[in-house]
Image 1 (cartoon, rainbow, N blue to C red):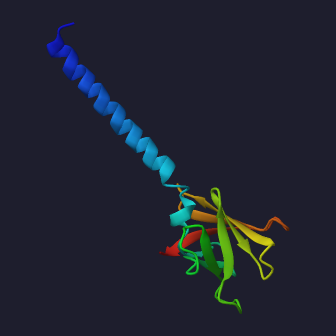
Image 2 (cartoon, rainbow, N blue to C red):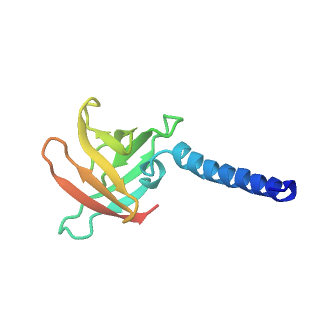
Length: 129
C-alpha cells in the first residue's frame, strides 16, 4: 500500500481510538448516575398519602458521597445517607442502621425507595431539582 494512503488511514484510526477511549473514560470516571441525579424533590404519584422526600448533598462532606434526606413531616433536619455503589443508603437516628435503600432508574427518572427490614417499597417521581 502506498505511503500516501497508509498515513491518513493510520491517522484516522488513531483519532477514532482516541475518541472512543475518551467516551469510555468519561463514563467510567463519571460515577453512577444516582450520585448526581438523585438530588432534588421526589414524590409518589399514585398513593393516597404519597411519600415525599428531598435528597440534598450533605454540607459537612466535601466529596459527593454524603447526602441528607428529609421528609416534610419529619422532626429532624434530615437523615444522613451515603453513596454505596449505585445506591444511596439512608440511616435512621442510629446511624449504623440502614432504614431505606434508594436506587435510581435513569430511563424513567424515578427513585425506588425500599426498606431492607420490611420490604416496603415506594416509587417516587421527580417534583423538582
